[in-house]
Image (cartoon, rainbow, N blue to C red; front, side, top):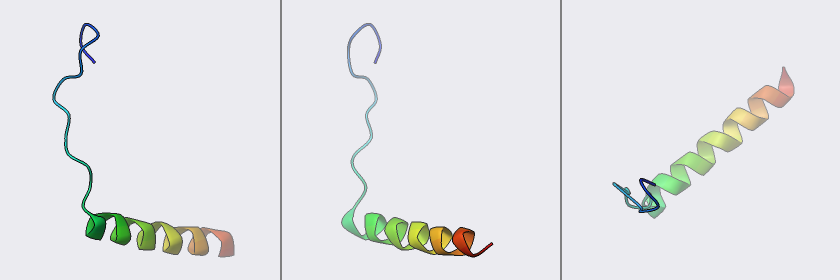
Length: 35
């Protein structure tokens, strides 16, 4: 926000991007629980 106005917003991630991110986070969580 600049002077109370939203500025230079990017679009939301695509569903495919969100699915890949979810899979990566799951793998990281499983890995770090084991060490």
